[in-house]
Length: 242
Ligand code: PGA
Image 1 (cartoon, rainbow, N blue to C red):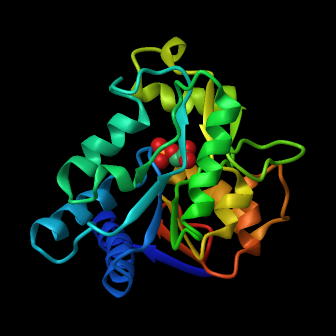
Image 2 (image 1 turned 180 degrees about the vertical axis):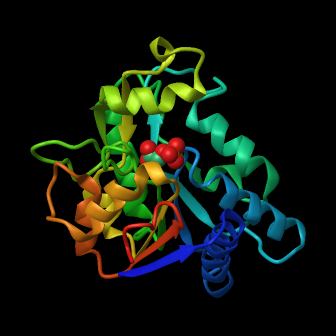
């Protein structure tokens, strides 16, 4: 495990984007696993800047997003489809047919999860999976539980997760109660995992996830088993790693 702590957000963003760009430069048809939420926004901004300067092209890249809310219209301003367009896809040359995000409005959620799993299998392996971390230790929307599901599946969001995401909605009642998420098994199959954590409010959970017991009650703790985990922390989130 490689843990890097950064004094400011800009340095973290440039380091994160640098890892992604370095991969695409050596492997133009790289398969990226992408995350949403507040955490990766600055990294996506750096990717767009580099694209605009002609330093990277995404035309042969394939992407798979981790998750999507169930029941939000695809064009809702808080859907992860909209998030990805707004922060990244509208600004780069990644072809639409190479973009994959679970369909949270599929009539048959189970069939949609199976379809998504098949698409990931067709791509062989995710080269680099970007992850944020939930305050309860979730990765993707894999919430703490007595057992975890390996592949893409339907989840009930925990109250804590809905509260954390309520800041993006008018009220907590508007936050969906369910989501489709890639499973931890799929996440762990990625060749490299890039975990990004920011903020004092996540210092304790990221420390526990990476140094404490491995347990499904803290899904991110399973990342300790991954042979190629890179962790980028801001100074506040990295406070306990001294
Ligand atoms: P955040 O969410 O990036 O909005 O803090 C992270 C997560 O819940 O995985």
